Image (cartoon, rainbow, N blue to C red; front, side):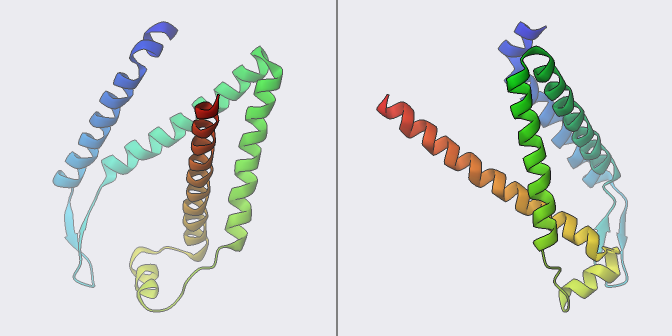
Length: 152
């Protein structure tokens, strides 16, 4: 099984991703369309939202299982994975405490129309900033590894 996944993992991931995107698109095209009080057309995307939540839960479970596996097989590598996860959580909560929630103008309409609370908005903003920080770290590590491999 491991060798099959190692050989065909990218193709399997691309096929599953394409199927999920297609299901999300079908959910949008066939979703119930309503017009809200402001006259804006809204599409119910329940299927796509459920698929996204399921994939997030599965990714989280896979991450936790891989950390436990790493700790049990090779303690030092597993501890590094656990430390990385804890640093990510700490970064998220630091960013959540620093984030400011904008008020007024179009934001008031969004809060009233969709019921987004200030804490939910803060969580989304912290998540986006965390993703941005991870992207920045990834770019720096990629450039470092390419420059290092060029000179070796």
